Image (cartoon, rainbow, N blue to C red):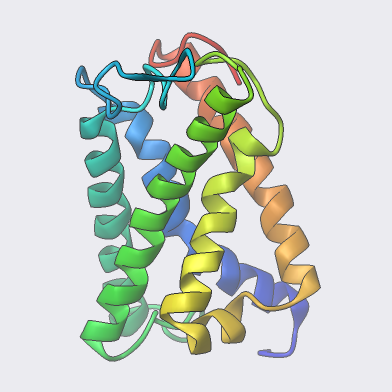
Length: 187
């Protein structure tokens, strides 16, 4: 079962969920206070109006909370289907927090890049909008927990599946955010 590509994909998608959840939940809890304090750099806002402190820390909180719920369920209920992040609580916490916080930092980095390229908040810039949080998460996992990264995320098939899945999930989350009035645009 462990050599089966479908099993590997299932495990990888399960394990990356704190990153996805952090990135998506920031939209739901976002608030008034922009992270760039309305400051500009070279005539453009540093991050834009959509990046708020409450959204940033709310995303980290909810991504981390989901990760702990996953860890608990993997250890106690479904370890026969998916593995826990680690049986060591300190390592599991490091992995979960790294995924949640790096997703939010990666999203912030994408916003910073868009402003430097003169894209306004809410405008669509493919790849940057959808994938910077994922790329930054994987980069940080490689640095912080290389054994975890190489065990679950280091193959071309998995990487391509993550890109496709990320694009689909990101698009769906933005459409839902638009429909419930949390986003001004559906992308």
